[in-house]
Length: 268
Image (cartoon, rainbow, N blue to C red):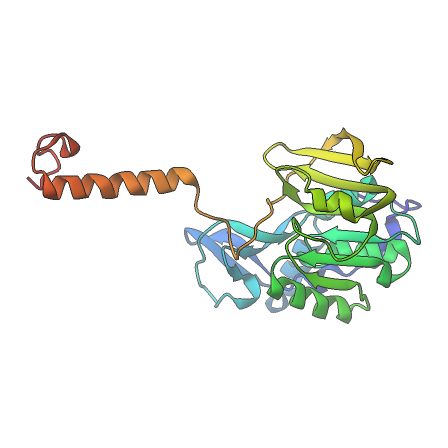
């Protein structure tokens, strides 16, 4: 992750991750159960300073807002990514003091906090997320640890709020949005992952406004971009649901038709 003497040793050592992740979800009860860090400081410290991802949001429910013993079902929609992977992505961004960074997918605010430390000026870091609760909570917790990046609530695949020397995305995209290239300064650099592949892509802006890059040897998997409060239901689930509904309707109106396999449904 980081070692003494490296560019990222001080940012990692001096960033109190536990303040940024007070509650998170763990599997349990047939779904997810919220873990309250302050209720057990030993568990809290162990989770926060392990190199592991902590799921902070499932479906539309954030762990901060989950009731005790409430079982939440659905797909994870936000997390505090494992520190080692956050550092890997930022390293690929080749951050040096004085550069303007867009940190895409604020999450808990951890990546933004590390970047603020590395760049030496919080105003050079803009961190963006689509979820207004995430950005509000992250801004409040970043303030507690003395970090004040520009925090923006917006769709990361749409128009971006400024021009940046570096764009590092902690969320995956099916393809690099054209708006990222528009927001990238001349000789700028972007880092992202491609949805469903585990591939880290780095690219440097070219004089014609495009970008040229490579697939890195490292691998990473992030949640995909979303525009709503949660991800849409998978198409196969919709197909199964629709097929069952159609079969029931055909059975009611056409007893013993091929739709109900000649009465085997027990309704005819």
